[in-house]
Amino acid sequence: MAGGRAAVAATDQWVDPDDGIRYPAGEVHAWERGRNETVCGLSLSRSRLTRFPHVGWPDVQPESGRHAEEVQSVCRRCRAGQGARRDDRGWTRTNPRP
Image (tube, rainbow, N blue to C red; front, side):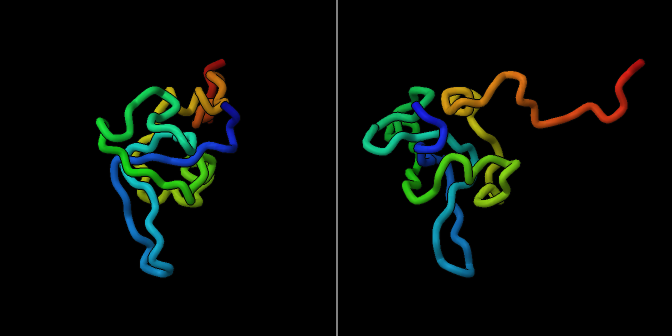
């Protein structure tokens, strides 16, 4: 599964007051169009996840800041399944010990 082709499924949604488009919120998962499960294996219907086919997976990453305003957490297994590496940390040490 390639990293840029996945859409998003999320536990909640919010509507942008400027353009009226709904965006994902809460916990987000990667979802391949045409499938009924997320990349990490959760069933969309049983997990009560809402699909967002118009939102790409890279757009909900916190470092992108594009549609990630209301995203509270990103599924680690989906992130790994989309090509994130283990050593890609979201933090850097600012004062390393000698």
